[in-house]
Image 1 (cartoon, one colour):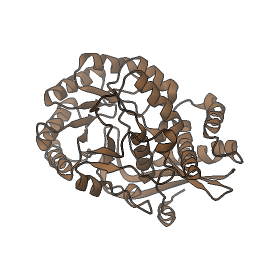
Image 2: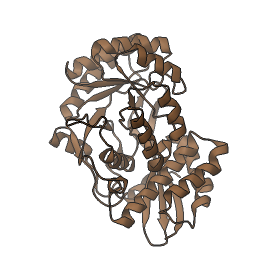
Image 3: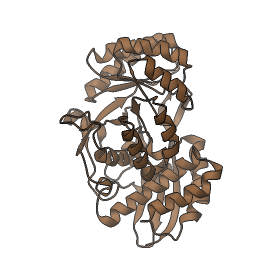
Image 4: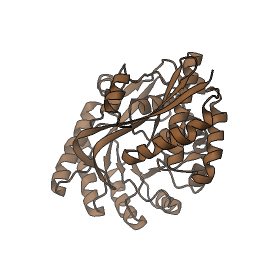
Length: 388
């Protein structure tokens, strides 16, 4: 079997409303799919993390840099191809966009391997520790409206996420420490006293401001405080973890085993959040997962993207060993964006229907058991939304 083509599909659509987080507002949603074809008719699909113009730049890396390195190779040699591509790109970027591009290619190669073997990816990894995965819902995005209106809306959205059946809720912050505390208080009111909620800052604070907000989150009983400071600030993470009782989470902007080694050795995380579509794909994710568990750091994957990204994460969460091992371990959660996302809900020939399954089951979804990722994109949908 040989690789005959590697194609990027950058999809984009207008969103029904403008949403934001601590760094920006956005009105369009982007998905970057990677298709790898073979001479035996087996096609694999992957996804690269990165919105907007980042996706367009990553398309060039996929098709003009990585594709020439692997065309004609055996797609089952995915680890060989990973190291070949990484080593040849190493002088030009050990993090960021080269790794995002490589991630999409690598996921597609794992999809091919599963199809050739007739097995889902979690079987190739070593089997499923669970056949259902609990799901938490996030919403409470920033919008261009007065703070008082945001406070009221956050309380309503938080209550709605709980009512939908999700096991926990996550909110965004990024206005100012004082206003962000008001938003967190509103979410706690919305979900009630015993229900878990998390706060995602998208690295908008200085360490002193993060301490101020973090102490308020302790009083509110928040489960974790996500990306409180810049991802490069390992010392800030370590200081926050040592000085706060709320769990410190992060890692979505970290790449490959070497970046994760430095982050974990600094002991700055209570909860690790690797992003498989960014850090180097499934091959590198498995090495990062081993590092996290070697440092006794629980993992809750960061998930953002289309139905391809969701399916890949379900495969990985199924295969994730419990940490620590026990009769009743804390199960990993699937992150789910509750805002409108047609690239997740309408892309696949057989939709995952996460929202409906969460509502019907009381908070969990089954793991796809078809070969490879277990899902297939609808080509007509891809072409209808493709911009590059």
